Structure formats: structure tokens, C-alpha cells
Figure 1 (cartoon, rainbow, N blue to C red):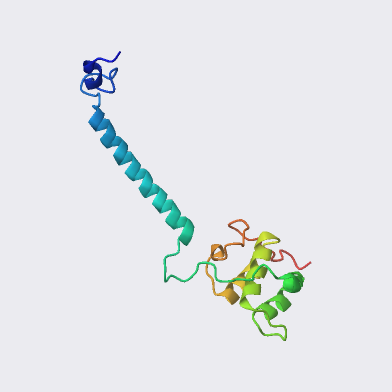
Figure 2 (cartoon, rainbow, N blue to C red; figure 1 turned 135 degrees about the vertical axis):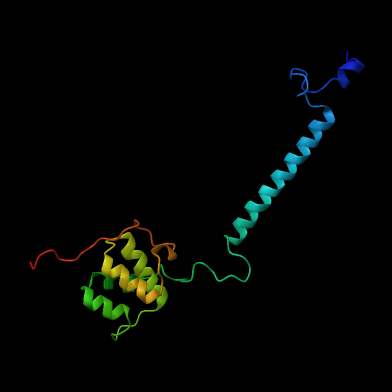
Length: 150
């Protein structure tokens, strides 16, 4: 059996005096918490739908088709001077920008050689290696300059 006095007692009956919340205060706090949860959910949904890109902003990922570079993958194995000539567009073999971005990702995830990475960055017009999202690799590149004349 429930007494009328039990219903009017604070919900936090075991809380110290002055800290216990009444039923109305508890409901108000729960309502505020629900509003905060709705705000956080809304933010997460917005981030997921826009990927951090607002309407009208240029896409952060510019090179669609950069993964299909099989026919260009042999360029990575060329000597430095021939590689730079092809990447700069000074040879008969022309490479579209999205394929150069694919070669950039291939080099960064593979041998990661400094002059090759710099030549690819120059062609793409980027200043930071993180501008090509799929180009992993560490924060450094591998220096391949000769120490001796051998």
C-alpha cells in the first residue's frame, strides 16, 4: 500500500539534505538531457551526410578515378630523370592528373622516395602530403641521394 506522503517525498530520498531533486526537477533535467542528446545526434548526422564539406565548398577529394592506375604503375619503377620528365608532361606519354594522384598514393604507400614524391606534388600543385587522402605513408620520405660516387 502506498501512502500519500510517499508520493510527495523527494525522488532521491537517500540524498543529503538540500541535494535531493524533486520529481519536477528530475523531469526538467531529463528533458534537458534529451535536448542535448538530440543536438549531438543532429551534429553527427550532419557530419556523416556532408563529410565535413558544406554546400558550395569544393570537394576535399578532387581526383576521382585515381585508383585505376595499373597501366601507369610501371612509371614508378623508372629512373628519376625519366620519371620527372613523364610526370611533368614533357614526354610523349601523357598522364591525367587523377592518375598522377594515384601514382602519388602508390609511391607514398610504397617506397616513398623524396624526389619522386616532390615531383608528384609539383605536378598536382599540392603543398602538403595529406592533401591526397588515400596517399598514406609516414610523415617523412626516404632520402635516396648518393653519399659516395659509387
